[in-house]
Image (tube, rainbow, N blue to C red; front, side, top):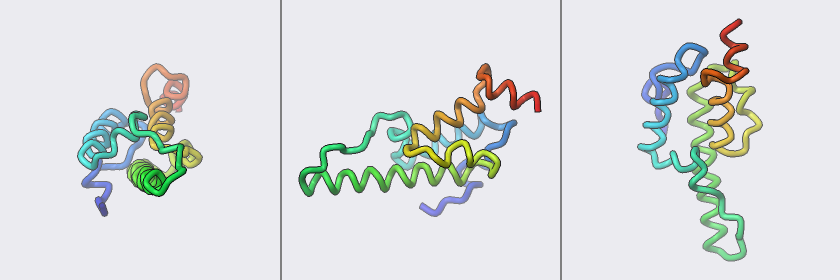
Length: 113
């Protein structure tokens, strides 16, 4: 899992390439079996009362950390602050979507700069 940014998205996310970045990240994460974490379909095991559930929770955390790591690797440094406090891949993905998708207040302000 030592993919470079060039292999994942071609270039880092910036204010002009969100659509391309989003498509490349989605296909990469689908290929890695991590997309379910981004869309919230794979959630953490909350009942960790037995060994199997403890192991399942640890595996979810590992997959979650990998997913956030991939997202962080592929965005420009000026956008790290928007995801650094996100505790799940879904929250990180949604934070970037809110920042970049057309029509959002944040996107309109960004385009004015």
